[in-house]
Image (cartoon, rainbow, N blue to C red; front, side):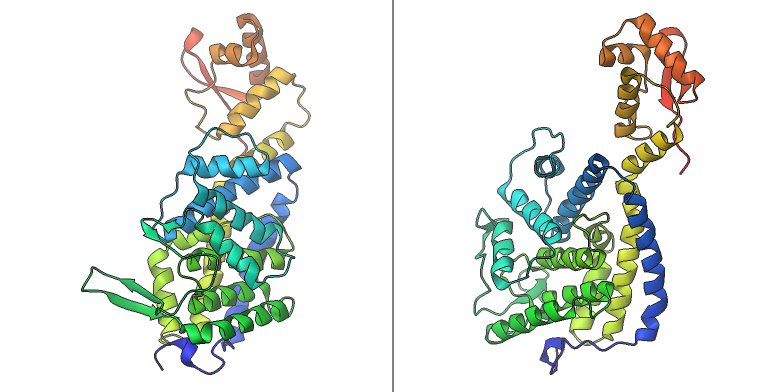
Length: 371
């Protein structure tokens, strides 16, 4: 047998539980800390954090497949759907479809997963009818042609994997949906997400978009595990960082060169790294929470709060040129004397610190909370 799917009951993955206990426990601690941290966010900051993660997830899940998305267009699409302030981004139907799939997988994780729903996701990924320059049939299972994962120049192709033939496809998908429904609550949620990912990419049911759908299903399984309709870490970002390793371990497992336990260990490590990396993606949100908690007793007027929030939204070192008296005047529409007085008040309250310069060239920045 050349491929894992050629084995009888191949999807009944066998692995040594004892080898997974320690890494799973460590991951659960990290997961709990992150979810506990975000539980304190108000609805506006929660939505902003969701938006930042969703942008990253959309950009990276496409990038894994070699597709470069316009980040501004992705950000605009996400902001529009979440009700966040947004600029004008280049419109792309395929971006809109991808965002819809990622949101539906998580927000509606408690709704049944059916073939009709998966077909809808696949169709949404290719609303133009093309994948790059290639015309693609979407919204239904693939046809009779062999489904192979191939790399290399024409004439020197290397076949990394061949999926089950069309004749087996309907049965494989029926068994997949049956397992998906019966496994929830009966299998560790992290391991279930890992198994769903491996099983779906092995079946490879569509002409294109299988990787993106596998990662959407991974997010859906994790959302079910956490009982949350918001994602706070991006699996695709971490997979992109170790894309070569990701493809190698999938190929090795699918070609029966590795015990499937190695895939579970790799997946656990991937989720752990993605949680750690999420702190950077949504660091600005946490910085605002920490800042206002630290200065909850400080008496400030609305103009001062507006300036502080502008700097917080930009993030450490990203408020171009730092704060100056002129910028304070332009943003708040007050006199120079009032601006100078209100800046001095925030210096006295240890909210701002002076950076450099003299007279009108003096620059200021927030005293950022220590991480």
